[in-house]
Amino acid sequence: MQKTDLCVHCGKPYKRYFNPTPTTDIIIHDPMLGVVIIERANEPHGFALPGGYIDEGEQAECAAVREAHEEAGLLVELVGLLGVYSRPERDPRQHNMSVVFVARAPNPGALKAGDDAARAAFYQLDDLPSPIVFDHLQILADFGKVLANERNLAPIEPFPGQS
Image 1 (tube, rainbow, N blue to C red):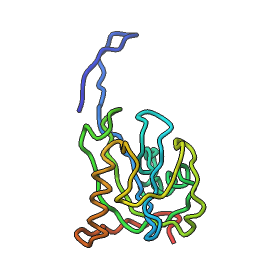
Image 2 (cartoon, one colour):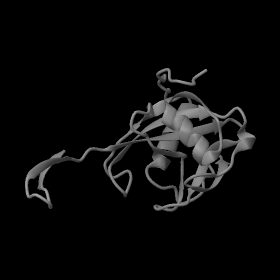
Image 3 (cartoon, one colour):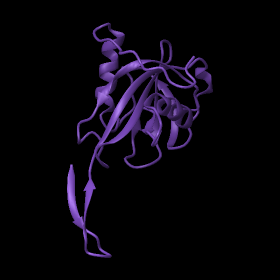
Image 4 (cartoon, rainbow, N blue to C red):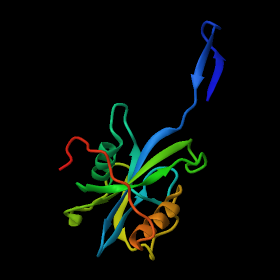
């Protein structure tokens, strides 16, 4: 969306653009342990999937791997794309759209909270903490359909550092 405003310094009109901000969320799944959920250290408080903003010039897949390491201390391998979640109201802070990946962690015992996470732990899908913020309950329900073979993951684009 584009709006025209007036410069407060010179009074001339200029155009401002209001577009959704790209983010990524990661479902780190271990068949025995469940999925990684973090407790957010910042507003909105509650529980969420690890994730965050995609930096300028950064591929979404690389951002997902980076965020998994920053927030959960895990080096992960992406196994597929769950989907893109873009409802304007999904994040109360602003219109963010999220590219959601599914990953596995070769060393799940290395899990530790970091960056924006106060705590990090594995949870079974039928025993999640509360409250889950954003639209992450919907994302986890969609992932449950993948586990039940009712939905498929999409392949991911190759990226630097991918094995």
